[in-house]
Amino acid sequence: MLPPEICIADGEAHVFGNRLYVYGSRDLDDTTYCSEQYNVGSTEDMEHWTVHEKSFDGNDVPWIHDKKGKDYPVTDMDLKNPTPMFQHMISTMPAFIRFLIKISGKKNLNMGKLMPNQQYVFAPDCIEKDGKYYLYFCMTGNSEGVAVSDKPEGPFENPVQMPSGGIDPVIFIGDDGKAYYY
Image 1: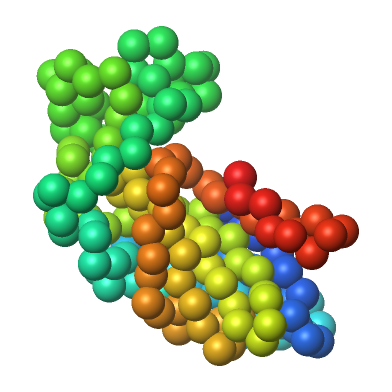
Image 2: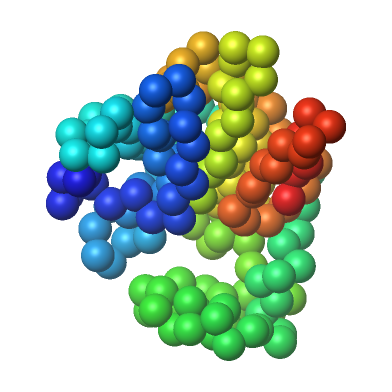
């Protein structure tokens, strides 16, 4: 088991070699969803776990600070007609965030503009292709990207922005060997 102080939410589990790797959001504590960094947990026997700290850091994403960069709206986070799950998510956010959402007058939520100094990363996925490991991530600012490493635990570097906005990317490798991005 992972140490209790390490919470990896939104987990995606993958076997690379003889180890199981768990990629996910890193909740800082019970009042803060996610953080600016990912940890990866790995094990060979499901009993003894290794926590690979700072496998990726949102502060290393070059476009996140570009105020003129392309913004890809998230259509499933509609503030005018929120789903029941999104209503619950908003209700559990800190009061100042709920206030900012209320006065923003925006149709879609862009956490990067509400919290510009926090480069939170959420719910990643990872694949292996030709000996390289690709970490697909999403973060504040409705931004999604992919970073690469020589090792499944990272560190993942050289992030490239994806032409999409949203949360929780998932990569599916079909029987034809092609990767499909959801």
